[in-house]
Image (tube, rainbow, N blue to C red; front, side):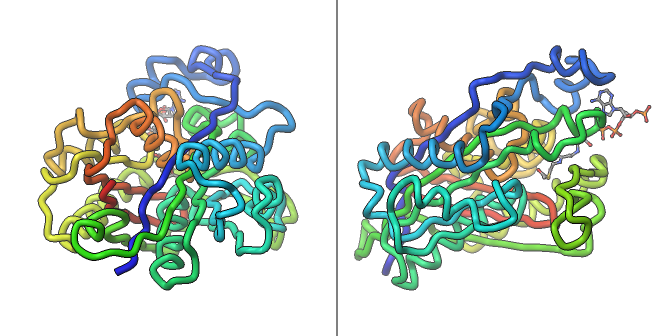
Length: 323
Ligand code: ACO
C-alpha cells in the first residue's frame, strides 16, 4: 500500500493587518456587526505588488524547511488558487522556478475555497498511482484584489495568505499504513454558479471583475454540504465523530464552523479556528489553520485530522488524515 504522509507544513501571511475598525472608516459597517455575524476581527492584506506567487513561495519554503526536505526532491507542485498572478501560465510554475525544482509537473487547481482539498486529493492520487514521491501542495490567495471595496456585504469577509504541506510517499505494511491521507471526498454542483462568483474573466469580459455573493443562500448550502461531506468521510473510514482529534474546517464564518461542529457533536476545543484573525482566505484557509495548530503543538503525530471545505462552484470536499 502507498500512502501520502504529511511530512511538513508552512504558511505565510502578509505583514499588514487590517482590523474591523479600519474597515468601518471606509464602508458603512461596525466591528460589532462583523464579529457577531462572522467571528472575524482582523485580516491580513497583501502589500502593493505582493502577489499570490510571493505568498505561495514563502509558504512553500516554510513547509519544506519544516519537513527537512530539499526543494530539488519535490517532483510535483499543485497550487490551489482563484487569484493567480496571471491568466496563464499557472502560478505553480512561477513558484517552481523560484524554488528551483525544475522539470517535474506543476499546475494550478481552481475550486475556490475548496481548492486546497481538491489540490490535496490530486496530489494524493498522483502519489498513490506511483507518479510522484514528494509533492508540494499549496493554497495561496490574494482575495483583496478581487473584492468590491464598496460592497460592505463582501469586503469585510476575506483576507490574503498562503499555506502549504509537503506530501511524501510512504510504502508499508502494518502500522506504517495507518499513517497519511486515509480518504478524500470531492463534490461539485455547477447549478449554483450565481450565488458566488467573480463577475468577469478573460473569455467573457476580458476583465478581472469582483466577487459577488448572496451570503444568506451560500450559508444555507454550506451547512448542508459540509455536514454531508463530513459524514461521508466518517462512514468511509468506519469511525465515529468522537474518534476525530482535530477538525480543520475552511475558515469562512465562525457560525458555519460552529454549526458543523455541533452536528458532529464535537467539542469546540477540538476545532481549529483562525477565522477571527485571518478572515476567509479561500484556498489558503485550511493549510493556514493546519500550520498554526501543528506549530503550537495541538496537532501531533498519531492524531486523526479531518479537513473540510465548501466554496464557489459550488464545490465541497473533505480529507481524513492520520498524522
Ligand atoms: N455591516 C453592516 N451591515 C451589513 C454588512 C456589514 N458589513 N453587510 C451586510 N449588512 C446588512 C445588510 O445590508 C442587511 O441589511 P438590511 O436588513 O437592512 O437589508 C443586513 O445586514 C442583513 O444582511 P444579510 O446578508 O441577511 O446578513 P446575514 O446574517 O446573512 O450575514 C453574511 C451575512 C455574514 C455574509 C452571512 O450570510 C454569511 O456568512 N454567509 C456565508 C458567506 C460565506 O461564508 N461565504 C464564503 C463561503 S464559500 C467561500 O468561502 C468562497
